[in-house]
Length: 272
Image 1 (cartoon, rainbow, N blue to C red):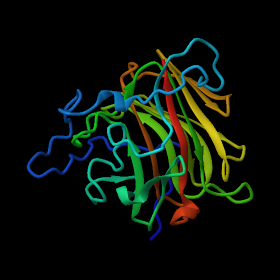
Image 2 (tube, rainbow, N blue to C red):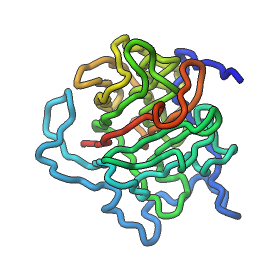
Image 3 (cartoon, one colour):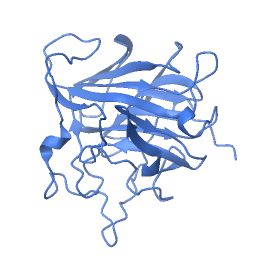
């Protein structure tokens, strides 16, 4: 069945009201804001070899505060679904988000679709209510991921794939779509209570690894692809705490199921 295409005003998109986690009688979507009992807070920021890891495109003195090389799936950092695992109550970008569609192998996270209704997501939202999940949020700083978006330069980017950040109250606390495949093209999109700011990038971003970074400052964002500044704009989200998201959904355009259509993530890093 055809799915309505996201317009240029559409981003990766979190629901205005997020679904509550389904843990028996506990239906609170807020969850604990600190470290759950027994959780190791150090596991959330596995920082390694800080002397050689700096943001690509922005010079300066940076302190690495989050570094996941995906040797394993660190569930203290990431939840591999949106609030409820593979549940129709927890749809993101037109699909259920299923932990079975997320795997870590050969030093990369692999997110895929199994069919037109079942996709994948990784989130560091510390308030998703998942037991043992501490998560990660940031305000000002730089976040970067090295990602393989499926497709080819001669065709298109497959599926509705995205690397983005979001606050706890959409749209008031903002949403920053750093790299989002909309109908086969790569877009940088910003959402807030005042509307959206969008920019497509006509270069080829399919079928190879590239770095996609966000320099978040007070009142402004700069977006970098492979160290090149591609989008700058003013923001009005109050510099609220944002968590990190990676996901694969379905919309109009090329749909490829299984590993051939997967989004692969080599690393995710954050600096302040």
